[in-house]
Image (cartoon, rainbow, N blue to C red; front, side):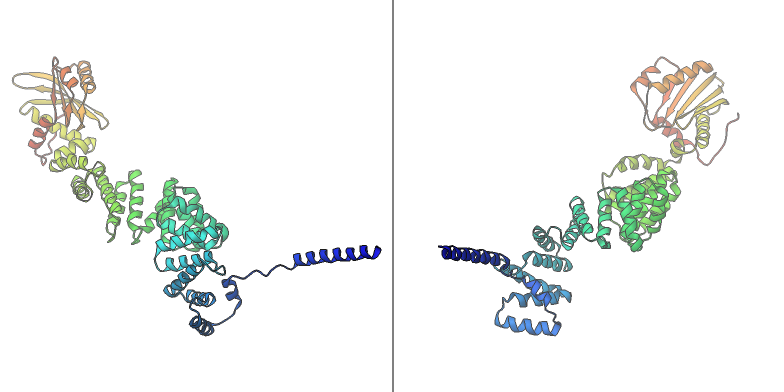
Length: 460
């Protein structure tokens, strides 16, 4: 009995020991073909000899195919490598030795270097499903999304890539540019500064920095960079547009015109940049009262981009101004020149009469009141004339205000002259009052009749 118990105990112990040993001895995991090849240290002639020998016996020998593919990839023979990786990708559908995600990544890298961006994008997308944290996959997918202007999609990919390898300068570069494109200017600026410390000749990053400074209202820094880039063949037109715009906003129109001219001298200019350069240059010329140059540029913009902004309205308005110097003076010149023109108009209106100017009042650039004493052989009176510097519609308010001033100054008659039109209310207001309204038609006849070469003045 005791012997039987001892035997049973020994059997149980042997079973337990067997189970324990079986647990320790695991079946050897089959290595992927890429891993096996990396362990083999062969030079190029050896690889070619062995691979060709094996492929002659079996065209689908995955280890031989992978050896050749890696060789061609390292040699940057992308077409040859791509064909082999595509073959391996096909075989990977039924062969567990092939890491299909690694092969897909290699296909993506080959396609990218061959300029087949759509095929590269597909391959990297497949590779990412199996290797979501892989640096090369995320970086290249991010760059491809950036190139497709899908900046919102590119941003998280580039962040992942940079997190995986923060020493890779191109990851940092595209991350900064991507942040710039999604208008995160402060974040972009801090990153782009780091990029330019290592790559000071990176013109795209430099331009982005200039625009970041512009968007952050740091105009001096923006001008320093953008002015430097004005002559660059790639970024010059856009840089000149930005620097000129900064000067425009500062009302330094002559400097703005210089920058726009530099931008327009480039041989290659993007259509949207070309139109905007001409448009803003025209506006700058208008501010400098150089009407003929402005009209010419506005006409060019109309030819390139019909319906662009308010170009047609500006052209129609200033084309007429360009044909009549006196109208330019009336609407655009400094107040002193405008008053001299008003005196000429008075001389024309009361030709042959004795005129004495008693008072001149200028309401900034809005209008000028001239109070005169007129004596003719038939009548004599005090007249208050209001010259309104507008080509729009003059309402009742300015006419009613003129009537009030006439009473204060004891003027017997009033005259209101405008380069535009008068509203119905204004016309009704003067029906029972000694005020005459001269709208644009009457004014144009007077201005056309005045000899601009004679600069006679009235006696005070």
